[in-house]
Image (cartoon, rainbow, N blue to C red; front, top):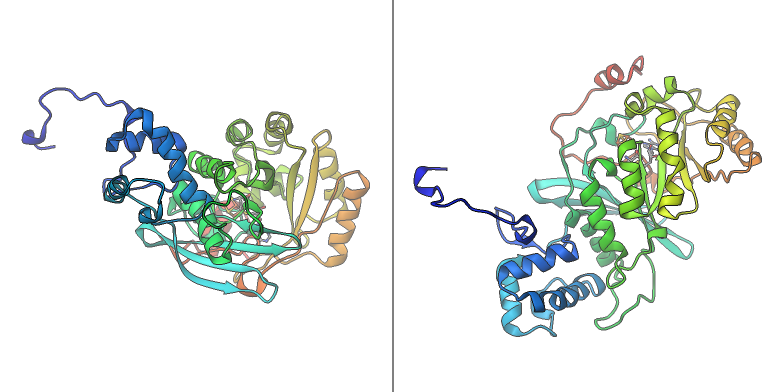
Length: 398
Ligand code: SAH
Ligand code: SF4
């Protein structure tokens, strides 16, 4: 600050009434919480009395009917619409490419502020459809079997960029209800999984705010039981997820000894299997969800023996659980291969006999590199070499 810019008296700003205005231009209303939007309207000059009602109206236009043009918000006065257009924007990520797999899976590459790119995957299923959403550009973690893990973290996505992924998918699927309608007829996009690029619990607040918008009954209306957040095991944030989001939880478990898990999911060196299981035990009760999904990638000769299956069952004893077995999806340069179908079947059988559902996840969209763990965008600060990853994870190279 130059001397002439220095304030003559101290400025006390109440953070609660400060608009979330970005220094580089008008603020994006998409991604603001209801409270945040109310504060932004008040800062623009709307009276406290009016602000709540205005938020409700704008909210419906944006999240119930998919409108992105203030002019079209016809229950707001012309003057108010003009004021909104002057102070705010309604921005969602820009779709750069869309690929459609032979099995109907769609993959979108979208561009966000700063020219960064992330991938989103839509998976149509019988009577429902799941959107796999990204939470970060790249990932700070370096799970050795994951393609995203070879891409350094570039930045966290904002809440607007996270909920914006749901909105652009809905645009493409053409399933916004008609203006005025309160419920959705078709539900092509009925479920959300936070299983795209990034570790959602390292971007907690933005993920939470975006999911609150997704669940809001006056908007996108996806029940918290249809939202699954997958974490590699960020233990300190698990209790918060139960309390503040309340969605279903999936955990990238992938190994039954700390020795192996340290190499596959290196965050295990920070919070080991025991610490993770402790955090998981209270999750279902606090979040009022039925059970936790344990994701387990099947890697040939690494974690797929009968002993592993027996150990897994023992470890999770007492936790309401479902074990989702994921046949490893290969990517160029990957240091592993997929377990055989017979091996996966035998593994699944042991778990099933112990009383846990153990479905094998069917790879979807493999032909367009849209399957679990195959996502990666060109946005990079610097590519890690396989050698670097091997050194970081303790693996002996290829
Ligand atoms: N970062 C989060 C969510 C994203 S990954 C997490 O790690 O949980 C979603 C799931 O796909 C995780 O269980 C992840 O471990 C798994 N995965 C990653 N790479 C994979 C691959 N190549 N094949 C199969 N599953 C993979
Ligand atoms: Fe990151 Fe999840 Fe991939 Fe691990 S599996 S590198 S946490 S995206």
